[in-house]
Amino acid sequence: MITPDLIVAFLTLTFLEVVLGVDNIIFISILAGRFPVEKRKKLMQIGLLTAMGMRILLLLGVNSLTKMQATLIQFDTQYFSSNISVQTLILLAGGLFLIYKSTHEIFVKVEGNLAENNSEKKPSFSFSKALFQIVLIDIVFSFDSILTAVGMTNGLPYALWIMIAAVVISISIMIGFADPISRFVNKHPSLQILGLTFLLLIGFMLLTEAASLSGTVIFGSSISTIPKGYLYFAIAFSLGVEVLNMRIRKAKGN
Image (cartoon, rainbow, N blue to C red; front, side, top):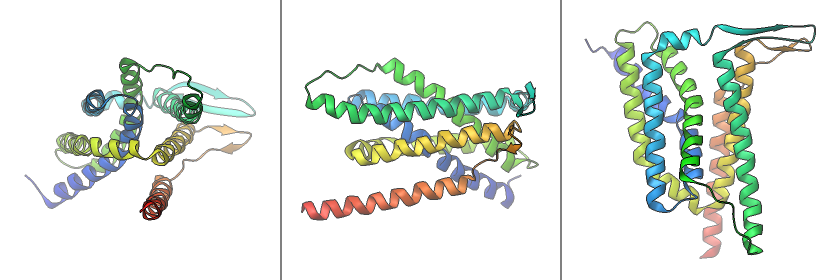
């Protein structure tokens, strides 16, 4: 039976899934920007559909997800202690990958412009390589998304079906808006750099989240997570400032 609580949970979860998927869209849009329009659309669609598949599989295997939170390796020394699980390893690897990839992409964009001015050939970047990187980051982002969904629907009837429906609808919304967002981001180089710095922040957040979940203590100091509200506020504020700058530049151009 459909109740107001179920409807509110479904709508709230769908909204949060879309918000949590923004970083996924940014990552895919920046990678897809290297390809022609036809391949760009295909890459974004495959990437987001893969994200949907990953999240549904994780939802169907929630028990396996719980097992991934169990301690796998334990360290306990005078200066360092940590209870490492499969989940923390995935978050750690995802954070390091995002930091590396964002830094590399910023370097390529800066050095790529210099190389273009010097008539040097840019290094090639294959479709399959881009797709592989998208799948890797989909796994990390899916963990974050599903853990949020499980926490929100805990104790509700039909929780699994609510979560699956929210994931399907949120990804469908993202697929609908992915192409316009990608075109807008790739049209404005400053937004690409801003998006990459967002991904750097998210990568750092994943590292602190992995350290917090594993109860890591270094030199007697524990590491706590960065509140996501602060992070998303900083992203929204920076984006708002950049939009104002774009309007000013456009006005001066006219």
